[in-house]
Amino acid sequence: MKTIGKIISWLNTAASGLAGILVLCMVAHVSADVTMRFVFEKPLDSTILYVSAFYMVAIAFLPLGLVEQKDSHIAVELLVETFPSKLQTALLLVATVITAIVTAAVAVRTGQEALGKYAAGAYSIESGGKVITWPTYFFLPVGFGMMSLVAIWKAIAMITGKESGLSGLVVEDPYLSEEEPNV
Image (cartoon, rainbow, N blue to C red; front, side, top):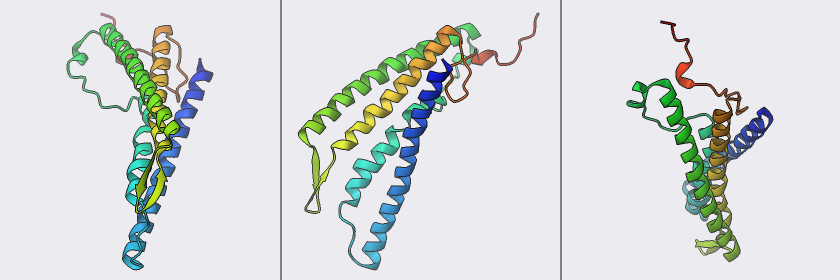
């Protein structure tokens, strides 16, 4: 199990690393556009399209698997904290399974859309030039697919009680991390 978890972690790191590289590319691209616009009065063509269609989509969706892996999504646990630990663990498993199902469905649907855009050769016309945009549609199924894969793997680890191997995460009852006193 640990080997598969490490592979999933590596894929998440690679996708997030690509998103990080694209952040740097976006900063360089926008800086070059601003410099060209104000220093040479010749702005770069299609900067807004590249930022909105390529960079921002990749930055938003590629790291979804890593965010799920590290449990970094926003969570409000006001009521759940008062439940018994076994119920909390059961609810965590149910939430993880629901996450896996929903994100898998979104990955499949966005993948279908991406394949449709690829087949149609989707593009945008900006500043009189044709900019191919179909590759950007593949960021969503990759991000949601990785998130679903992580959620499935976490659920399997919870059910089996074994370590997931996901970036050093150990599956245990998160609500019993401290020893409970024997009364």
